[in-house]
Length: 207
Figure 1 (cartoon, rainbow, N blue to C red):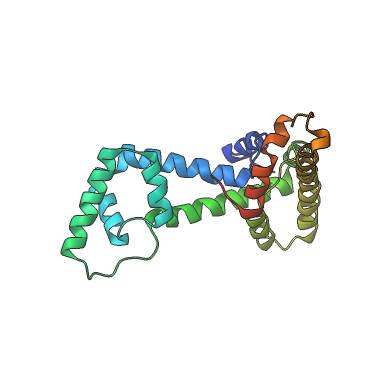
Figure 2: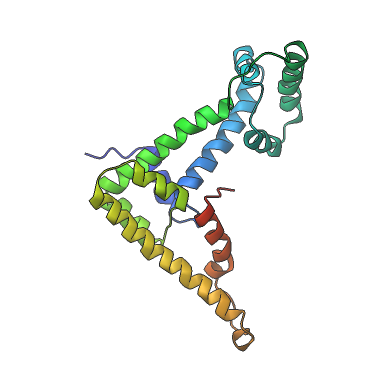
């Protein structure tokens, strides 16, 4: 019997949005982690030691945290990192960063949950289908490596391709309406953002 966790209901909500639902799950997780980090972890000595062991954060996550703001939090963390670097510049650090490791675990749980829900819940599949939801290409490819159930893969492929065909129709409408002969026809709400959605779906961008 399928146990409907919070992830289940989150996915149903994200199906109503334009982006890959797994990308949305990841983006929301990262934003929440950064919020909690600056609120709870900046003054935690054990946490600051872990960050020093990594030598800080990777470029991607440093940018994500920088975009979050918080001058005081950054000053505390980076004063600690710079002091450590000045004292121990030759010391070998761990690869990656703390957020990279936690993010990997979180993403694995999001992918597994999606696969379980898609396999066990008709409601989940129906909602995925009816809302014209598409997974980004990178996440779809990962999901296919996580199961040997060919029937499940075929079912996922079927819905994905049907919904991508709808996305393609929106792009074709944009092209048509940019033709001077049809310039009086306004783009629909969905068409106005379809080109951005297409980029995200093919490249796996979750920004």
